[in-house]
Each structure stands twice: as C-alpha cells, then as structure tokens.
Amino acid sequence: MLLLFGHVAAVTSAGNRRMPTDDQIHAWMQAVADASDRPAFAALFRHFAPRIKGFLQRGGLDEALAEELAQETMVALWRRAASFDPSRGQVSTWLYTIARNLRIDRQRRLAGVIDERLDDWDAEQQPADAHLSPDELLHVAQRERSLHRALAQLPPEQALVLRLSFFEEHPHSRIASDLGIPVGTVKSRIRLAVAQLRRILKEHQP
Amino acid sequence: MIHHHPDDELLLSLAAGRLAPGQALVVGTHLEGCAQCRSRLHEFQALGGALLEQAEPAALEAGAWERTLQRIDRADPAPARGGQAASPHPPMPDGIAWPASLNRCRVSGWRWMGPGMRYARVVVPHDPEASLYLLRIGEGRSLPRHTHNGIELTQVLCGAFDDGRSTFGPGDFDAADESVHHQPVVTPGATCVCLAYVGASLRFDGRIASVIGGWIGM
Image (cartoon, rainbow over all chains, first blue to last red; front, side):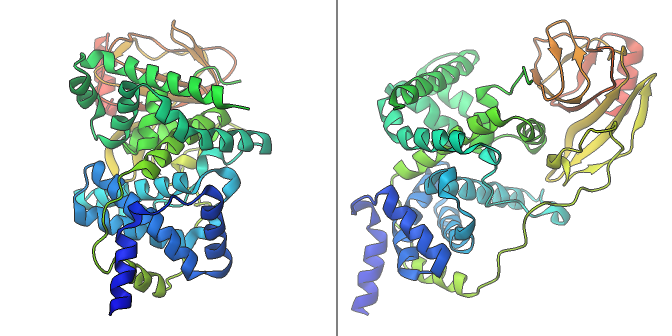
C-alpha cells in the first residue's frame, strides 16, 4: 500500500522533477517501440501526462475530459510508438498533434456531428513533413529544438498572441480584448508575432 | 511552381485544430502538393508542442497510471491505417490526380451550371453543411462577377484563372473575403478545375447568375 501510494505521489508530482533531456525522451520512446518497455513508458507518462492535461485544461476543457484525453494520448503513444520518427520532429510535437486530434474527435462526438461511416480520424499522423528531403528534415529538427528558447525571447505581448492562438477557441476577440486593440488589427498582430518568432529562429541557426 | 499559398493565420488555425473541416480540406489539398507549406505547418505544430512542453503540469487523478495500464493491457491492436481508398468521384481531366484529402468525402457527379461550366458537390465528413464544391470551367469561360458574404477558399487543381488581382495556376491557393469583388476568367489552353469552399453565400452582380447561384447552393 505504501509502495502504491509512493508511486501515485511520484506520478502526480511530476512537475517538480528535473526535466528529462531530448536524448532521454528519445531513448524511452525507442524502448517502448522496440521492447514495449514499461519503465520507459512510466517515465514518459510521468513527464508528459500531467503536461498534456494542463495544456488541455488551459485550452478550456473541463478537468475530467482533460484527464481522460491525457490518458488516451498516452495510450496512443504506447500503441503507436513504432510509428514515431525522431528525424521528423520532437516527441512533444507528435503528442501535441495526437492530443489535438483526440480533442477535435471528442468535440465532434459531443456535438453529434460525427459521421460513423467515415470515422477514422488519423490521430498519429506526422503529415506535415512527409516528403521533405533529409536536409530539410534536419533543418526542421534544428528549428524545432530552438523553438523553446525562441518563444522565451519573444516580447511578452507577442508570446501572448501566439499562446492565445492555440488556447482560445475564438482567439481574435480574446487577443483584441487582452491587448486593448480593435479586432480588425488582430490579424496583423498575429502576422507580426509569427514574423518575429521566425526572425529569432533564424538567429539561432548555426 | 506555386505562387499563392495559405497565409500564416490559416496554417496557425489548422495547427491549433480550430479550422472548420471544410476549410481544412481545401488547405489540406494545397498541402498535398506544397512542401513549403507542409514545412510551415510543421513549424506551427512544433509551436503547439513547445507550448505543451511548457504547460503547467496538472495533477492527475488518483489511479490514472493504473487505469492507463489497464487500457494498454486490453491490447487492442492499432487499427489498420494508411491509404484510404478513394470513394467514387467524378472524372478528372487526363493526368490530373484526385486529391487524397477528399477521399473521405462524398462527391456528386459533374452537374451543369452554365455553358462550359460544371460543378460537383463535395460533402464533408463531420460537417455536411459545409459549402464545398469542385468547379470545372472550360478555357476562356468566366464565373459571374461576385463578392462574398464570408471567406472563400480556392485551390487550383489544374488549369488557371485570372481574376484581375492575379493569375492562379495549378497548385495555387487563394483566400478571398468581403473586400474582394472579382470575376475569375479561365485562361486559354486548358480546362480549370478548382476546389472551392464558400463560407457564406456569394453575392452575384447579375440576376440570372444570382438565380443559378441560389439554385446550386452557392
């Protein structure tokens, strides 16, 4: 019992742990893909599940649904780890697209607009870069690694614009009210924020 | 050579999972043929990944790990994925591939909408009300002059048209809104086939065009 309690505590206090490195995360993914390695899966779960839940809640989902989709995303990771290709990007990007697609799928079901006949939403896709050359892939991967730093260097207002673009269902009106600007100018603010992010990313290029 | 691409905001909406299914299909059709935009989309998805990585971790409910283990132990194999067979669709001009993005849609046959002009209705899964059409317009023919009550997204599959703003050729993407008042004219040389999403009804200048527009649901 004590053991079990300790385990749950370890899972729920993931936020206080040291951040794993990209190499660690990729090694865990490899172990899950090659050997269905449970300790590696547990490590990925500890790191990612609470963040996915937090991310979904930040995006407006209620706690129960966020919890369920976070678990579902981790189940998808377990089942599809072999289809993850580290040369095509980060685990966090891959998990983001899975969680996003599960959320869209769930919201359509709740709205009753799901078409059962056609219901096989492709949750594990890594489609964006399906036909990029190795050079381009390397470039994409490098930019992706720089993204965290770039985001931190962005002026707070521009970081907010990008954040709201992901977290709000109707980001335009929210961005307008948060920044105290007319709705008509939101588009250009988003453009500016994206351009600035790209500029910083470029500076990070070796 | 593709000259016209979806703007950052559309790709950002797609990456954030906010784009309506009908619009997502038009952008998806563009992405099939445009490595540059696939790479841009990936960048926005990576931004989503970075925000996920930086999200404040939320405490999981007690038993979350055990429940997840139970679910993976049920060991239902991952459903077979991969290429989905194309559903029946109207014939395309020779050598023009059917967009894989439309494989899950129900598509009507070509229907007459005027001399040298045909359309096919594309029914979008999860969003059957979405106004998505394929247009097949003969060379030199033009759509009636119109403006929009909402957004209009167009992806050129083959041929080209010019609407006074620019020429849109194979692979090109266009987004037009209320501010655009145009009359697309198909350039000589080839039939033009486009995938078009009409966010709200078009406003045609002429009465007859309005009648036809209303009749086919545009």
